[in-house]
View (tube, rainbow, N blue to C red):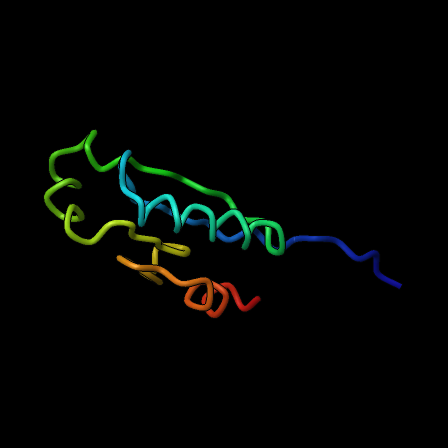
Length: 87
């Protein structure tokens, strides 16, 4: 009988945000709720630190990518992320 091992890598989430963004704060709370059910690695990026990212995302934030695939942006609902994470 084979020993059960957890070889599946955790999903990776990239979260584009900036301070003072209430939609970003709400999205981060939802990400925290998801993390309680499914562990994932998180990279949080403040778009103000990179002018190119700022230009790309300033009217779209928050923006969430799951394993490099865009899953949600703007006003994000729990159901959007739950579906993407298959919770």
